[in-house]
Image (cartoon, rainbow, N blue to C red; front, side, top):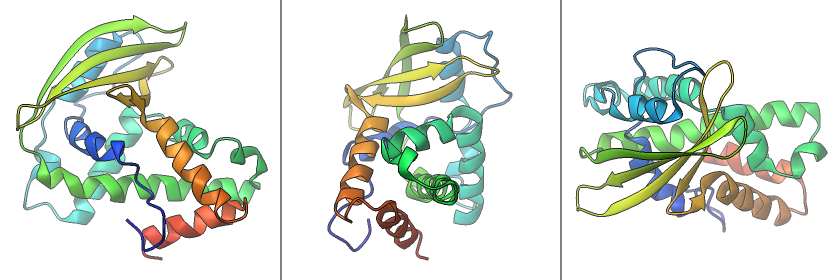
Length: 205
């Protein structure tokens, strides 16, 4: 959190932190020819030692998490979507700065939470086709306290399968983050620099 009136992390994202602890390592790239369900299952069931190892420094954990984000998520697309209508209003320099800050924000916001992983169970269910490029993969996360959380992963086909959104109990993380960023910008007179400044503060810059 940052010491201003609004939070950069929507409340549903606190649940996402627990979910993302299941997406810890890919043994190899998963191509577009693979089934989206297999893609999510492969990612979700792979080793977690690289991020939960207590001997790993926070800096090392962040770099591993950054690599995983690039392997599994269409990060630039998500970043652009999160900025919404303000993307077109941003200058080229602002767009470049924002994308870099967005990635750093995601890495720092979530990587530190991996140490709290407590061995949640992850079950992949049905796959529903949305359009010629996208599929929605149903899954269920069973937390250590027994609570079950329904999670849907929107997976896009391309040169490789990539996650473009995560829906936690029906709530889109991409839309939620977009609404949060829009609120920050609007509270700063519609200026994108207001969001950039907030992200810089979050990064401790």
